[in-house]
Image (cartoon, rainbow, N blue to C red; front, side, top):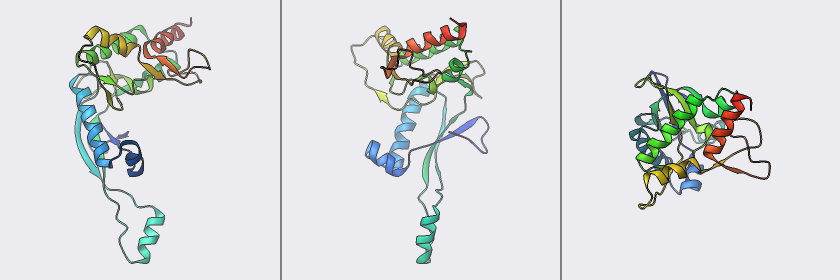
Length: 212
């Protein structure tokens, strides 16, 4: 994400390059941007993500090779504009950074639980729920510190029969990609594992901050 050059308290999120978008989603940059916008809108309406401010197009920058090739034909090496999502900036830190620096507090833990509760209330199950994507902070429109999922990836389906309490517990226990190095995404379960329940990482982060 990039800080918006003219809009205070806003960031710009670029979508994947065309080749990556076509490979991962079978569609164009615009399709990926629209999907990201719809997911972000659902998150914002649930109060679990920052507010969306719009979907814009940003002129592309031709590579040196493209300029050279098109220059042989006396043509302008124009590059199609790229879509981007504009959303409120969260002024704060990621849970991963807080855990890595041993500053993840009980208050922060409660704020993350509140965020999970809002997701459960809205019946949303984000795919990319991990400590690197959760920020504790404030926004221009809300000065009260909250936990925000700033990148949800996409949304998984929720069974109609699943109760709010069951969804909340499944979010807490959702498998999360973790790594071997120290930090909020550390592999607390040992080197043989690559996944950990989300809440287990948070709990271990609390212990780490307390020096236990």
